[in-house]
Amino acid sequence: MNLRATTAQIIGSVLERGESLATALPAAQLQLENPKDRALLQELCYGIMRHLPQLEFYVNKLMDKPMTGKQKVIHYLLVVGAYQLLHTRIPAHAALAETVEACIDLNRPKFKGLINGVLRNLQRQHEQLAEQLPNKAPIKYCHPSWFIKRISQAYPKGWMQILDANNQRAPMWLRNNASQQSREQYLALLNELEIEATAGSISDNSILLASPIGVNKLPDFDAGACSVQDGAAQQAAEILDAQSGELVLDACAAPGGKTCHILERAKDIEVVALDCDSNRLERVQENLDRIGLTAQLICGDGTDPDSWWQQDRLFDRILLDAPCSATGVIRRNPDIKWLRRNSDIGPLVELQQQILDACWKLLKPGGTLVYATCSVLPDENSEQIIRFLAQQPDAELIPLHDNDTITNPGWQILPGENNVDGFYYAKLVKRA
Image (cartoon, rainbow, N blue to C red; front, side):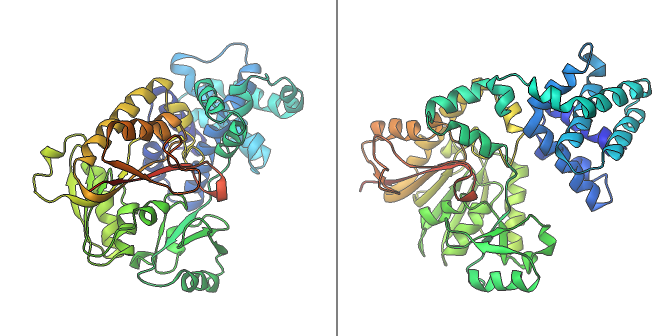
């Protein structure tokens, strides 16, 4: 199928049926033999999700009436064409021709003239139309209004920087496997292959690539020499700091990056990786196998430990990477902006609370629990920990920085800080 037609269908599946790009895109890429086509499909889908409100403004401005119902796919095809003209280096004539021809594969040949006319008008009138862009925050910042409201309330001095960071392309971070070689040694291997990279400052084994590349080009990737993991996410295992001989629970473990990092950092530890999704646990096993690590995988409900952990042993350390809104990783998953709803936050906060309370019962006295999310919303982060500390008299907050206090607990990393994703961490110890 014409690549632009495929893109229009994927955009429709995300916006109309709530399917994530993480699901829809790989399935479509499997149908493409050329790696360049797979890369272009990803560029188009991700870019459209970043700039959607402005693209739709231009398209709607040039239409007599909006496309609805069965013809909505033509609206998405016009958005695909608009993105190519305004945000890519694809020659205009090629973008126009391929987008017009997509009507054939979408079984809408009668719309070829419309597609051609609208996109040519966009070419000619873009500067004038850009001056007409409404000064409304959702269009100006390309985020839904509910999210802008929450972020501006939580970060009155920095909310615009957060929105701007969300609209940038995410960089590619690596985690060096220190059990195999030092970071300096792996940087030397990358340099030998002329892969430009620098040592990250946020984590001891983080490496930032100058530009993303396929993992098949990374030296010894299949042997576990490194893993792809954002610099902020690499803090999880370091903050947990599991020691030799300990029993560790990685709750909500899939896809397993943090599980592997915990095992890489300490010898002779026993790790239990828990997740409620058996399919996602397969990803955990694949990551363990690639690096040559072993963990006990359990498919179970984090809110109900009695259903999967009936042993007398309590855990020395627990990493709870809680299910969350993922509002800290929007630059990496821009479809989150349009898939997430304001009404999702309350139930997520309640679920996090239930898992946190349940996991605390599995922690031995003197043990450590690290609570983590990839969210930037205080409801899921600092406010969650404030509630927990107020209800758990045996819980003690271990500060991760000077301003980490019981009234403002944890470490909130914002998107773009040190070029990493948005993440939150709080470290708790159970008093003996």
